[in-house]
Image (cartoon, rainbow, N blue to C red):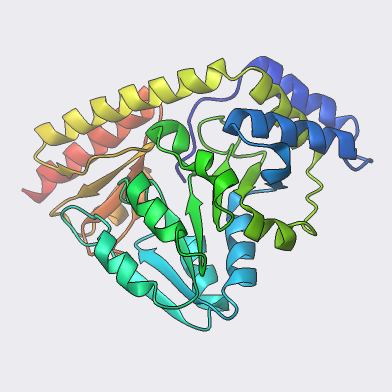
Amino acid sequence: MNEVPYPPPKKIIEAAQRGLSHLNRYAEPKELEWLQGLLADYSGVSKRHVVLSPGSNLLLREAIHIFSKGRKAITVSPSFLPTIQAAKQFSTKLVTIRLSPPEFDLDPELVMDMLNEPSLVIIDNPNNPTGNILLNRKMVEAIVENTDILLVIDEAYYEFSKETFVDMVQNHSNLAITRTMDKAFSLAGARIGYLVAGEAFLDAFSSLYAILPRPSLYAAIEALNNPDYMRENVNLVIKERERLRKSLNKLGVHVYPSNTNFLLIKTKILDIAKMLRDIGVFISDLSNQLSPGFIRVSIGTREENDTFIAGYTKILEACT
């Protein structure tokens, strides 16, 4: 599930515990505004552009539900599964751009050619499950220059990639960015997502008033007030990711470059996901999104990664 394997620091857990003592009460508006302000400062935008939600997947779903009406919806494949599912459910006209190996790049000319009518474009950057950066500033500027186009960029893995277009939102009303505290902040169990929305999105989201659970709210506020642990998380994960990549390369496994906390792997052992599951190692089987032999591996602790390598090595030896 691409969670960070390290629990948050004690002070953040204690903040969540303080929220438990108020479970009979909804969060106060001033507390929600406090979190909104902290996320605005973290993102470098005005507070009015920040929309809170219990999970960024809900924001993506809502954006598709609202803005695909009367517009062509454009997504990439493979992509974040809830985004694909929502696009299929709500869009009256859906176009999917296939990301093909070996590069899994997004062709700018192909994208621009599709923008021949009012459209909603949803792109995850970095892409899940390839880990690839799909967008650059030139491409984003070209897309949002057309005011008939609405662009939503999912930056769930921003802290790992350091690639963001959030600074463009205040000057481009038709741009919105979704982010999450699930990953780098070690708060997957708290479910804190947020949208940094341009003016074209704000009216539609103004009625979306997210009353977050108090334990989640208090934990998120404490995390944003003490973000150094998040940066340590990111450094640890990247260090482990590169160690895991080198170990797999030595086994002759094709590992794709990653800007996230997971690795996309292509193996000749087509049923590798089931074989790993049989020995208690759970990874993501991508045979339905890509082709047999593709798997996505979340970066865990050193011990977890070593268990994966040992299991993979054992299966490889049995298959050769």
